[in-house]
Each structure stands twice: as structure tokens, then as C-alpha cells.
Image (cartoon, rainbow, N blue to C red; front, side):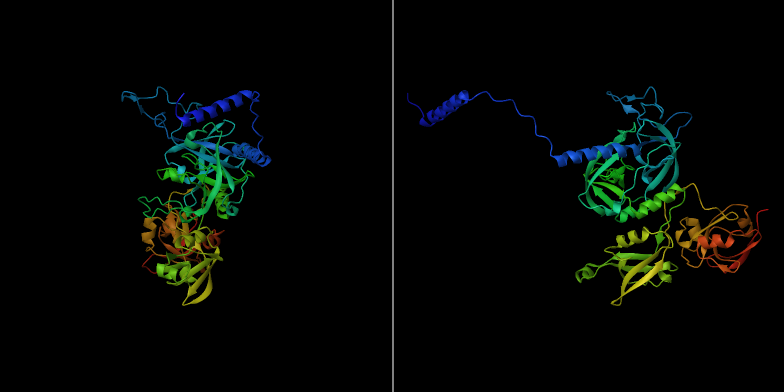
Length: 496
């Protein structure tokens, strides 16, 4: 038989192989998959245990628009298949197990007596709040305190047996560490059973994307816009703001925020606010219902020019020193080169704002500066930063005879600023509020007035003023000045 010798050769090989296969004994059943290596099994067990334990301290938060005439506004009218609107026949109440919120967030228990930490940016002025715990219990909640500068807020519920999450050290994190995120993405954990994702710490000291608005065109409204954030590849969708980022010991090292989603898109990177000294100070202050105060230096920093960087210089340049600020009082000058804050090198203008801004009022900060080629250190006691945005304070400083005073650097009310002449003074306090018909009002004290002395005692800070008027029962003489006018003595009598 004639044919292609190459095809014949191939067929011969196939027949030989087929015969060989037929001669083989039947194949044994496939072996069971090999056991996981001990290290992987131990890691898996650790993750399972951490998720189970830490989830007890994570709650789901539902935001409900305040009801009008007995109706809830927190529902959606959706288009039907033919374009006609479909209106729900029954709008479930927030207490109903079938209730699905359209506004939601996450919170973390920080006190067994019902204190829930969450992100400030999830709060809405016209909303009611409901918290669902891991035990499927739902509680109405209210705001105990809130601080826009740190983007942290504290809700309170009527409970006394919650499990607070242990706090770790977010400042000690390293890139590559495993972390677990627990939260309420897209309200999927609205029954109180936190959803988990995990990943690694991708980077540290990241900056939040600026979000300009009508009140702040720069958009850098929080400390986190200046480089505090933990970056992680753990998935953080909408609704995870206020959740817990925990390490493999089950300690919270960060409070998660869905910043990428808030900015209008989602990315592979998630972010969290680190649990560091500033974080703990803010939380402790919020627990007391007090206002969180931040340090203020009073300089305008700018980044070095490309020529300066190429010449090997590091740090930031002081473009302007605010008249009447602590920076001016303690000797900082325009054109100074600031290279370090409390021994920590500064690489850009945001770094100076961040390191100073994390400190409390009256903290003493050491600035390493270079002036005319010579290096020196200047120690400055910080004044108070003017925090903009709505602060919630349930335990405010008590008024004295109907008036409140503040650092001149911290007055943010436009009317008070105009009355005070739009400038700072370091040797006096400014009056921010005066109750109508109060003893202070009747004496002639008005918002925007400066107080320099109580009797003959100078007062530079609100604390000095409070100490000077403490336990005073009779008439008190105040030396008061209004911008552009001479000082005058006003006598504030006790309330009759």
C-alpha cells in the first residue's frame, strides 16, 4: 500500500503507544490533596480567630433622614420595567429586620457603656442614627462629640455590656504587615455581622485627596490631608468608613475610611487613620464630650524651590509670619529654613502643618532652623488652631457671667473676626459669645472684644482668664479693648 511515509510513521507510533497503555494496570484513584503546610494552617487559624473576636466590637450604623409627619424619608422610589415609578407599599421602620438603609457606615466600640467611634464625615445634620451590634440588637444613637479636624466622631447608645476593641499602635506599623478590615460595605453587614477583608499595609503617611468645597477652596480640611494615612490593599467599599483595621493580634491599628469611594470612584487602595498618640488624645477628649484642641504656630510654609533642592537643601521655607502669633513672639522670621520639628526631619510644607497640628494647645515644639547659613533651635509654645466645620461638644467650657472667651488665633466666626480687626494678639483673649441681658452684656462686653486684664492681672489664654475669675463673687473689673479703640475698664457685676 502506497502512502505518505510520514503519516504511516505517526500512525505506527500511535498504535505502539495504545498497545502499551492497554498493557498497563488500571490507574489508582486520585490521591487526596496534600495537607496545608503547618505555617499556612496556623496563619489561617489566627485570621479566623481575630475576625471572630474583633467582630464583637464592630457595629453597623444606619442613617435615617428625620421623619416628617410620622413618615420616614429614608426610602427610594425606583423606576419599574415600563418606566413607571414603583413606590414601596410599606416603608419599613429602622427597627424592622427588613429595613435596608440607603445611608450607612461602620462604627467601633470604644467603651462598654455604649460609646461608638466612627468617622466624622458620615454624619448628617438632618439624620437619625441607629446602631446594630453583633448580637443583632438595634439601638437608637446620638452624637456625643465630633471633631472635623481629625474626622472622628463618637456616638452613644443606651447599652452597658458592649465589648470595646483593644487599641494597638498604628505608628509602629511596617509595610508588608498583614491587616484585616472589618466593616459594613454597602450595608451588607446591617444585621451587625461585620464583613471582613484582608491584605497588607501597602504604605504609610499617605495624603488624603483634597475635596474642595465652597467653604474651603483648598480642600485640606483634616490632618489626614497632610500625610497621616495607612494605605492597605484590603478592600474598602462605601460603608466601611468608621470600621476597624486590626493586626494579627486582634488590636485596632487604624480606623478605616472609604476615601476613594467618597471621592467618586473606588481604587485598589484603601486607607485608615492610624491609632497613634494623636488618635488616642482625640478619642479620650471626645469621650468626655469636650472640644478637641490643636496647636497653631502662625507661619505660612512653602516648599523649597527646585534650585534649592538641587543645591542639597532640605526642609521648608517660611514665607510669612502672622503678626501677633506665637511664631512671631518666640522669634521665627520670614525666610527661615525649617529642617526639623522635635527632631523629626521635615521634607515639605504639609509635613510642618502635620507635625505641629498633631500637638495640643500650649505644647512646646522645638524647631530646627537655618538662618543666614547658621543652624539653631527655637522653642515655641503653641497657640490654638482655628478648626472650621461643625464641632459637636456636649460638655462645653462653662460661661462666665454670660460670656465665652477664646484664643485670638482660634476665633472662626466671621463677625467676631471682623470685630477683632482680622488679626491675632498673643497678650489677650477674645470674646466669642455673650448672652443677651447677661451681666457681661449689661457691662458692655460684646463678641470681638479683647480682654487684656482681670483687675490688674494680665490674661493671655482662656485658662488664665478662667483662673483669674474663679471663685469671684463680687464685682470684677475687666480691661477691654476693641480693635482700633483704646482700652477701657468695664465692671461686670454678679447676676442678681
